[in-house]
Image (cartoon, rainbow, N blue to C red; front, side):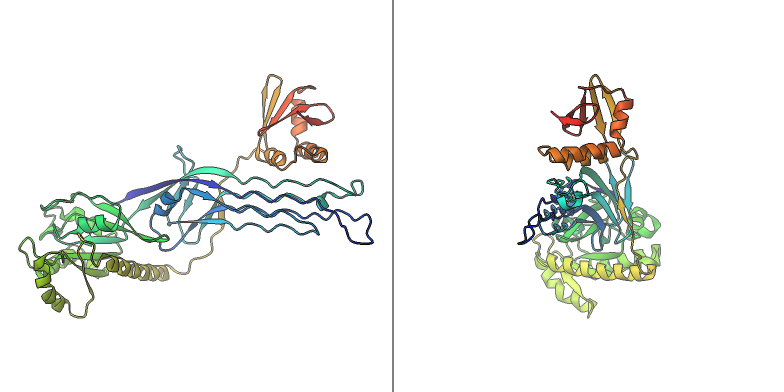
Length: 432
């Protein structure tokens, strides 16, 4: 009954907005100081465990998840607005992995839990941030930081929310194929379905559930007859049942007798199974005999709601699916009540390497790798001399320059940070 639902997505955080270079220009203020505002932060891509979702089908349909960019800073110390985060809803039990690795990095278990999988870039500082006693009119601002980009693999173990029960040839496999993308083997003989088939029923873009077509049950199943024990073990894991009845009596059996016999077998195996909520499905209404039997069958069930359908033509199926999802949500609400109130969960982050930076030495070339130096370079306007002076200070402060000296760098050697290259001199770093 357990099956694996998987998806791979590309996530990209939004870019931070650029800082602004601006100066006060009011009348009677001839030498107005800098007043450029900071750029807003880019949105992050966040996984969130949501109610009403059992699968990763929406991630399969939308494998590219890109957050919005932050707004640029403006004059008069006006900061750019932060971008909204991109929320990707996933079911409880979702495991996050880096593709092609076996080790999970995040395991999302409870509704409301979140995980940031691609951080948005921070906004660049405006020139007002760089004013000092010795730097009265800075004509420099930072560029916004690019957001993180990452490919991740998602996996969730599926356990069916809803089980299909009924005699063989009642039309369960046809119904599963009609309501989902599952392609169960269908033929006109008993025990066509030998193993459970799972299908994802998509109610709309944000609501779905898992439906299981399980091997048909026969008289004596509780004692192991046919595929009885295997069938009943799988049924125990579902939250509710769709009891599919062949209203046309194609095999010559009485539909009402079939219904009673199935419930008898369920009760003999485990009385709890008869307490699972059931919706009664009267199938094969496309056949003449079903129409003739319909009134007598409905009379037997009285005020109990039944769903006449044709799994072959699709008539009545949409109404059945909506009713199934509605009942399933009420069941889930009762389960949550029994478990108690859900406490808020902290937002998790995919961990970053512990090292501040790494230095790789080649002949006359020194490659600096790390999040901090990469961020410093990407947020620098390489065409601006003042910006390059600030970059030099940042690299010195984080220990990059000292590490280069210890590694034996000499004048004229090349320093590479991310995609940018510099020529080293003892007193400063100049761009090529």
